[in-house]
Length: 193
Image (cartoon, rainbow, N blue to C red; front, side, top):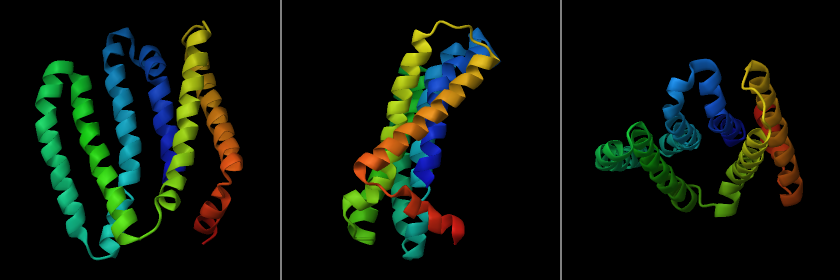
């Protein structure tokens, strides 16, 4: 459920960052767009990683989270200065995102293999379908937005949001059907129970 909601929000920010910046903030802020896009990816990664903490707490192993966070801090310390010097604000965004990616990847592997002892497919499927859906949505919507020559204004921005929502929902539905993924079975107990 977390991936289903957080991935499209991150994708929306990623795709619409240039238009949002141009329309609401002005041309002088355009250099921040790549950093905003990287931080949108960071947000998606972080939303999944945030679900790992309660698992470690539940099995009475908060030390794992502490060790992973320390590793993330070390990576951040190593990366922040050189990336920021080389790429500016984009480098700072990358220095924040890369350690988070590694932190969450190691956390996921530990949870799959050591804690809940499930197969990788069962663990990753709830993440995979929303991830592929938003990647396809982003590719199609960026191509569409770039191919159409229209004036950047509030109406076209709102239209882009609706387009992305429709595309994401469509891709998600198609992938669920093709892969036999039962998303309804995943969320129904959460809503009703």
